[in-house]
Length: 492
Image (cartoon, rainbow, N blue to C red; front, side, top):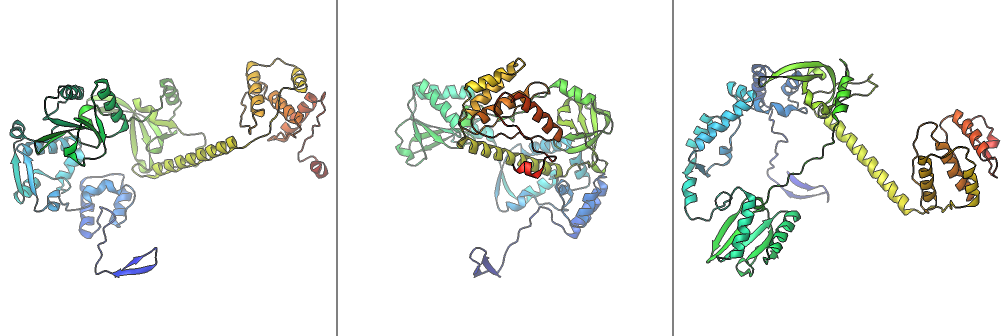
């Protein structure tokens, strides 16, 4: 075997062996396949036959990871990977282990079922005891350690749980300057750095900013700011010097970044639910397209609640509490070629990701077009002329306030010297054509030609007559081009 460089296309050197790591935690062999098939039947798993068949044929399909606890007959514990290590436990670790295991079993009946079929995925008390008997471990009484004078990592030893009080105590200790301690306040972000700087300035405390801990013994100031991520505060004593490192997490409350959720109107939810009928297709934000098959009452924690029952592919069903109606929306009108999504697969998430990418691409294209338009120079068309005022006065109706506002904006656009980018929307009969005719007049009056594009022949004829009548008192030539005009006329 040789090591081949694909870039240089040459053999670099010979190798005697190569370790190929499995691409998945799922390891197919006859023993594991047999254990999976037996466990699948013992657990009485329903409506997931496609997984049973695929895994039995040693094929991994999306969602196979949910069966990991029964995909291996024997799981290795962390003790096997930490062979010859010394372990230190709290003296009450046995009780803590029992409590954690009991909470796990109470939290999900699935874990209890795994214990019943003797799956090694759950590390039992007997497994733990056996591993301990083969390991070198020590018990520690942390209470005794805390009572002694020691230099211990100590959010709970030096500092209090109340972070505001910790910050106040730190300021008081710095001001008193009773000890020869050097205070190093660590921060993780600019936000907290600025907070610390403002607090120190307000309390008239001098400080310096340091980039690293080189020359620690030569620090002049008593307070330093350092960009360093610390889980908790601690003390270092060396050569009769004391350095106290304060973690940002011990002094400030954690800032939680929350995803902005679109506000949902309760009236809209009620209206949308009232429009749902049995058999209607709905779209769940996380699970995709399903079919609404009715309301269902379910007892949860001895409280009867109402749920929407949604049917998915392979007769999978999803119950949605009525208070979570905002998670679903009714599918569109065209439902002829709709197929239900499969729960547990990634198809819906992949489709959502694909659509998001397309939206992002369109947004990028729009932004690029807008940027190019902003940089490009357009023709300058003056709106203040006697002819234009005369044309405007010929309008036989009184302009609405929206018309006047829109016309004024278009006049500014045309006289800005930049390409126009404006869309005018309005109902039928609200004066959009008059706005188009005034814009056309300004362009024609400046020496340009104007083309009005119509989607239908009927509109071509209608606008042709309207423009011809409106421009009749002015020297403007109005023509139309459609499939009924001759080729020679079109060329002319």
